Length: 115
Image (cartoon, rainbow, N blue to C red):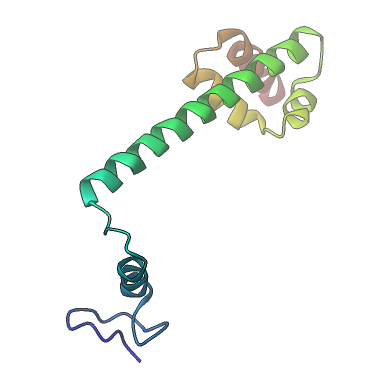
């Protein structure tokens, strides 16, 4: 069964409407105004930026911890494992956030392993 709205061809979920149209109906019944697309888009962008900033902060904290472990003499694969990172992921993060000591230590390890 498909949605009862004329221009919609999605499968119906409840009251003969698809999920989107059903939610619209519920908002109307509750008296909540429909969402303004521009406001919704701005809120979504803001939440994405906030999540990206949080991810950057966590990555930098993990790189600091990795640097501490490497400077303490921890074997690079073990140090990465303790932080739930692969060596390639740690190298990529070190390059991205310009943490040269971590990048150099891991690249030296990779080079020694390849030789």
